[in-house]
Length: 230
Image (cartoon, rainbow, N blue to C red; front, side, top):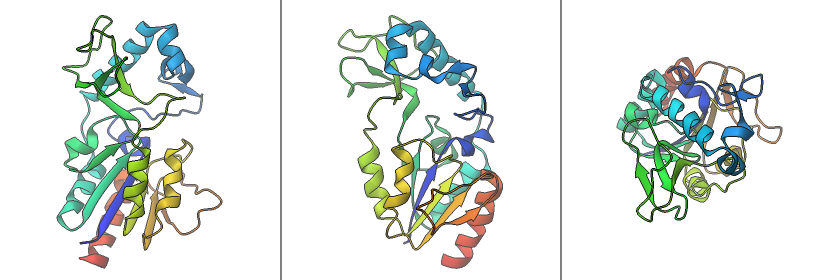
């Protein structure tokens, strides 16, 4: 069975109604990224950071996986499919994908501020001041903020290196180290990039580019993969 590795970014969730990470005005849902998504922000204004992620979590509970998420899950009938995502939503899981690796954390989870290995599922959408781990420490969003290491990166590299087919969907390829995964798809005989404004790094040339939205592009590629391999 061929192994497909799908690497996704904000573009795939945008069609479900989730706002993309980077807007043209440099703001993230009307906030400066430095004010809500850095360790310094957590120290400077914990209440703002908690409320920001509470609102994002609340929005996530109101949206559903789209046809692109579901099509990727459907590929599991024919291929060994692994999803590596920069997104912190759970739309891939809710869409039916069984092997999902989150590079930048998970919105529906919280973790201890004294022991990062203590991770908890959030019941509902609110994480409040005074919510603590079993050691009595305040819980923070289980998100990889700017300036923090990406613990899942090494695992993502290993998965990517074993791909027979590598597909990139809906990412600006501007966030590192995640964007460097393109260079690890060494074994992949077929490589695809789906994005309406797709632009590959100058040193990446062996991708077939589908300049379309995630839903339309995945639908097009799904048919091709079935025709070519099944």
